[in-house]
Image 1 (cartoon, one colour):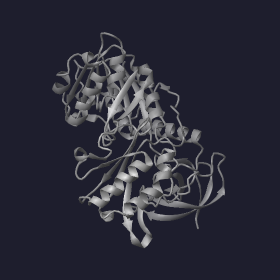
Image 2 (tube, one colour):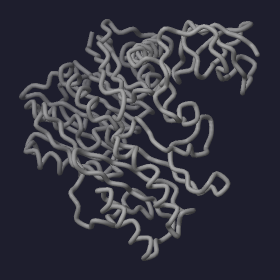
Image 3 (cartoon, helix red, strand yellow):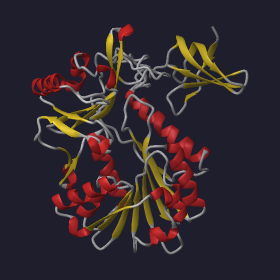
Length: 433
């Protein structure tokens, strides 16, 4: 078997080596290690491989905690010390900003850390009936595969959900539609757990009785989703308490439904909002836009600081949820919310929002290229805080802001929203130069 010395980690947490001028991306290898590897995909300029034996170990290597590490594709960095994981993600962010955007931040913000385990309050579990593998499988996808890893536990899920996985397998196996139930959505709040079963066929009465008994025994709510996200309905109990997460620092409580987008890591979300408000510095009398605002995760803290917030989101459902959250938290008078497709933003559509003193952007992985290009000469807020879940699109958008719009990249840093994974969440501050 070939041997290589690992130089760095890539954005997916794979060790990077160079052999005979070709880049080798090796799963399970860490910088500074010498490894024996096996290639599973070869291309003219690169190869993808897996570490078979660690000849020289990194001091940052740790024993993976999860018994399914290496099979389950949900976590790829459990073999790396958590502090080193954050440092690696910071390097990924800096590399993307420079190599993609040709920009460098003036300041590197300290990484935002939180719990390394039991942090994932939102999850979408795949479900498959595979008789050859013993029946029902529940878990995340296997590495490099569309197959479902058969999880007996999961240490990044809350303990009560992890312990529930074998029971869920037995439950689904006893349903008449065990082969037509592809996923279970998990949503956990402070005192409520909702499981949404995606049922492609109607349930029989016996199925509903089984699900109701499971809900009572496990202390959860069971919902059904026969169609799109708006089709979800409670099965049992019919009138259980709603889901909500709190932002104590801002005296805010956010109601949401199980299929709404919310951050999976409640603790990191709170710290990320704190950092965002420190950088944005909302003040009474200011008018601040929150683009891709969702159900108001950043909007309500902005309003709580006394500024008028203008939230824009592509989903009518989330806009309605944001309005209701603003009313519930007593900030409706200084909150405006609009539904609009920000991927088609124009100079005129942004100008229609009125005067903007500052801007917060929190787009999905695709980034906000239409928004940053649409910022016209008369609509350049002096300060922009950009929250990103994809360093590459942040870097692309940063290049436009710096080279075409006249902004300076004052600072950037990561928030370790998904410990044990290679996912990089980050925040950046731009100010007119």
